[in-house]
Length: 196
Image 1 (cartoon, helix red, strand yellow):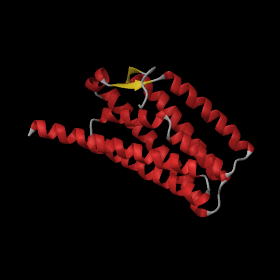
Image 2 (tube, helix red, strand yellow):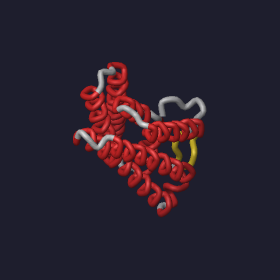
Image 3 (tube, rainbow, N blue to C red):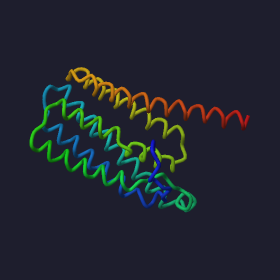
Image 4 (cartoon, one colour):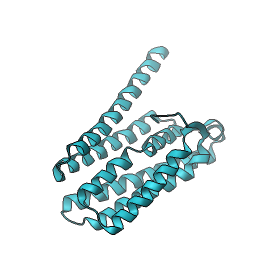
């Protein structure tokens, strides 16, 4: 997570339910946007893809839950950075966005909501939780999928809005994730060099 001022290390089993709940709510929000924007087909497909991305997070979190439940070694020592204020803020944001969508939103506003949600610390929490699997390849693949989806989001902002500030925010998300992958690759190379 980028800012850990109020965050603390918490056992994975204590945050899995919360992370899963929030991922479901984000998925439901994207499904609601799918219903609001059934056309053009490209936009409908985009919202479906975003919902599918969140469904993938839910599945990954269920896998982490099973691993923690079955493997006592991982259950005992697995912790992640967690900030309750982030959860409170995200729940409030999701509630407000749901009301706004029901009242009617423009595509530009819907894309702005998506950028806000994808920039939330929830994405970082999911990546941290995937660390329980202890498979760098699996974690890196999940991050690559996030980068791909953020690329789609950036494309939609560029294609369907004239909002340069929103486009810059979407592009910044891609660069932040790429930077995380590069940092992870450097760490892997260092570990390999120490072993070799």
